[in-house]
Image (cartoon, rainbow, N blue to C red; front, side, top):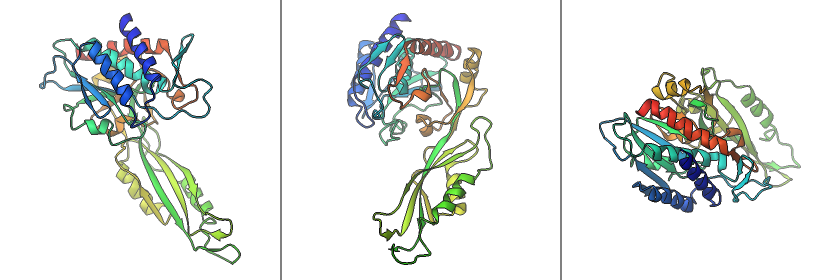
Length: 353
């Protein structure tokens, strides 16, 4: 176990030192390939997704997916450290992607390696290091689903402090338009779309979706962008808004789109995509109950992950803290990686053996 943890930590350092922005993950994919080569595990690669199955895979058994991503966002301007230097200070490992989701990725990879040779498992194991998670890209985990064996349940590695995220909100982003009459600013105009903006924003602030989830709470709707006008002396023809809606498990994305199309005061409101749905796993599923038996707590997660593209029950679980994700001087504690591998293995021992 100690050697596995040490090797996983060294891989994480190498991943940090290798830029892997979404759709540019080819070099980190090569590092993950090298792990499989070193551990003599056959693997496959599809674009920048790297995957493998356990040695004694049996199509008669259900299949458990272990998944995390190796792409990152771009570093923000608040960094005081080099984001690509795996800097260890005390128990902290700093670097871009260390927390989101490199620690989860290497911990799940170590766990898969631990169980790779095991015979007579109750589940098959499939491991996928996926690309383009941060951008919800077309060549990420969603592109792998037609290639992989049928997945019956999944653990998605994201920083949850090794607590059990049994549900996750979906996401729909809307582009909305408030229309008016364009004119010269010097002339009277009773149809200035910018003046209509206040009432529209108040409507979005006050609107409440009726159905509340036991684990995910209310649907959260937020206006995040406003754009209007190009010059000081011209009234624009329209104001454009972007609305971010985090959807609980009581609504489908299609239902949210129908409600806003019928109810919102905008002249037009159009969803960019309806494919990033909420996800969950029954609280009585053996994966969840195994985690509860280990003292882990179940909760609902407001953040989006690759769970959104899965149609099977899925549990989000991983070392690290979601509040550190996308932050300046991102870090993960080294003991969190050790704990992550330990809990993953203990949890799966209860389910697989």
